[in-house]
Image (cartoon, rainbow, N blue to C red):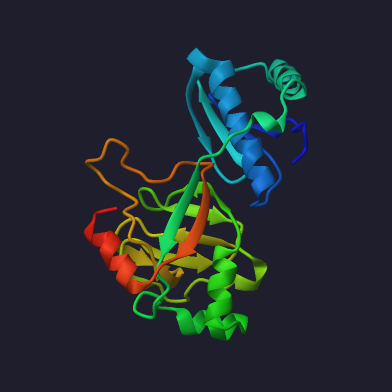
Length: 231
């Protein structure tokens, strides 16, 4: 990653809304820039900021009064010049996945599309670290990137009416985990015994933006043992 992150392009959406845009792509470098800039805005604008919303490549700020963008740019570049990437920390989460046929509903579709054996598919899925780029479309659903290009498979043309909670799927250049039972169109390749969303928990969501995630394989017996223990 570059030591200095350039100031993003800015555009006023309304009198009290301004959007800052980085390169329009889904990447770890871009994600880091967006999150760093979002933290910067929350600190620099403080009492003038109503809310800031980060996406894959933009940060939208809702403010009480208009701001001096040139001054904000100077402040950002000064901070960037004094900051090194070594100061950045991530939380690492290791997630167990059972890739058994019972849970891998789209096993055959993934193999047919990629030309990979299921063993090769599993190894590729587990071979790298992912980062939580975004949390949506369900409470606690993590969009994890970046998937190995050999595993790129389009989402289902006709989404399922119901996908069970904790199902692990792939779609396009990302992988994700369903936090609750819901409709969905990702290609399901396994399931984790972990619960991603607990409405009554102190921390209701398992994942946070920026978390580093690694998958490892467990057997069906291990899955049910872990599930029974309520991990």
